[in-house]
Structures are given as C-alpha cells and as structure tokens.
Length: 171
Image (cartoon, rainbow, N blue to C red; front, side, top):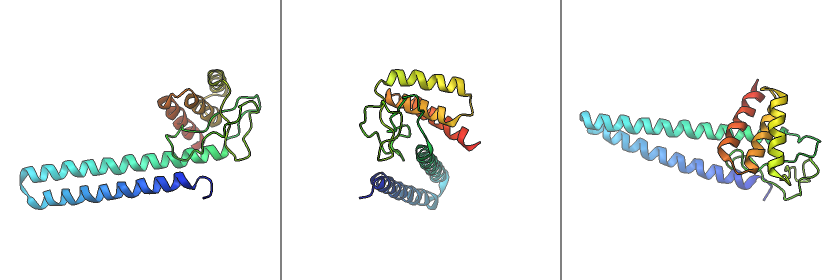
C-alpha cells in the first residue's frame, strides 16, 4: 500500500459513516414532518439543525485536514537543528507521523517526514521565539509552533497554531 493511503482510506470510511448518519437523520426528520403537529414540526426542525451542524463540522474538519496536509508538504524545517514531529497537529488528518529520527539534523527524512525533536521543550521555546520574531504572517513559524505543541502533547494549542498557519498561508 502506498504511503499515506491508509489515512485517506480511513477518512473516506468515516465520511461514508457520516453520510449514512445524515441519511438516517434526514429520514427521521422527514417522518416527523409527515406526522405533522406542533411537536412533529418542532422535532423535525431540531433534527434538521442537528443535521446541518453535522455537515458543517465534518466539512470544516475535512478542510482543516486538507490544509494541514498541504502545509506539511510545503514546510521546510529551519536549518538551525530545530526538528519537529509532524504527527498530529491536525488530529490525524493528513500528517504522516514522525520517522523516529533523533531530531538533530533539522531536515526531512528520506520518507519526507519531519523527525521528532530530541528535546520537545527546547523546540517549543525555539518555535515560540520564531513566531515572536517572524511576526503574525509567517506561516512556517506558526506551523513550527503547532508541531512543537504537538510534540508536547498539547493538542488544543497545536490545532490553534496550525489554524493560524493556515490563515497566514492563505494571505
């Protein structure tokens, strides 16, 4: 199986499950709508809102995964020896994971993955300094910070930093 195909198949299966869920919700909402009455219409409206929320969240997460995968392909680690792990700033969509290198070279491995940092705390401090020095529009600095947060297992801040990188990259 080609590299990176496994996560794509997994996402496709999850999307199919979500599609089946949406079909089921739509069917239930249609049944309540056909039943009529204030309660039936109210339940149909509530289910329709839940259906809309499901579609919106799924769409947003898929776009986030695609954007993060694009950033991972375009990202070049700094030459100062600050290597980063690329395994999860996006919650699993699009990133291939670290290759297990010792993190001292600062470059990508033979498989294109960015090695995990030898000292995640030191990498976090370097990435934070890069964001402070590089300004708000440096997408690579924000992406580096997201990778550093991920190496520290702080997924919430990793996603926030990666979202900032996507916003800066889009400008």
